Amino acid sequence: MEASEFDKFADEYLAMHSTNLAITGEDPEYFSRYKIEEIARLYKARGLPAPKRILDFGSGIGGSIPHLKAFFPEAELTALDVSQRSLDIAKGRFPDAADYQLYDGETIQLPKASFDLIFSACVFHHIEAAEHVRLFEQLRGVLKPDGALIVFEHNPVNPVTRYIVATCPFDENAVLIPAGTFAGRQKKAGFRKVDVAFTGFFPNKLKALRGLEPALRVVPLGAQYYTMARP
Image (tube, rainbow, N blue to C red; front, top):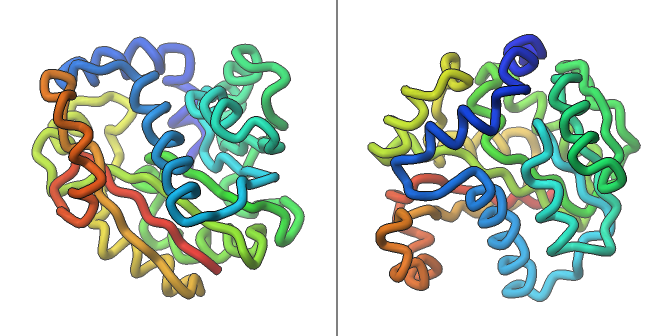
């Protein structure tokens, strides 16, 4: 994971991302919010207590931070990223919302068993596949025994997703990961239970149908998927 790869796009990230997502009829804010909204729904559906400490792994310029604070207002939030420029921008946007920390790309230097929820949004397709298991092992180490790791990724089966990634400048080195492969790497890292759900089935023009998405979670055609892994 190279910091320079993200530093060079940090200042233009929002504008570039907005242009890239125009095909969906939505803006980056929508995609940031729906992920956290889905996590809140998941916690409620499973009767899980609201997390008290959350790690946003690969937080970038902070797109998820206001939504994490909105849906989990009592939680302490740590934002971790390899890009100092991205962290500076995030801190400028949301100065008191999180503890912003630089990650060296090798070792997660955070207290063991300290987070109730670790969240990551479309980060791992930027990381070498050979590093995934080792990184998941580190994330499991800083997760509480009853915590959850929830990771969103692009679904390579979806043709719109493949087009968006192929035409996105900051995804130039991205390698999309099949959901089953991704879940398998988490299990190899020691997570005892990994659930997979698919999401993002309907663009803005079909948003009236989004109420159907909960029933489509097992259909592997959504634009994105997420895994929920338990240690």
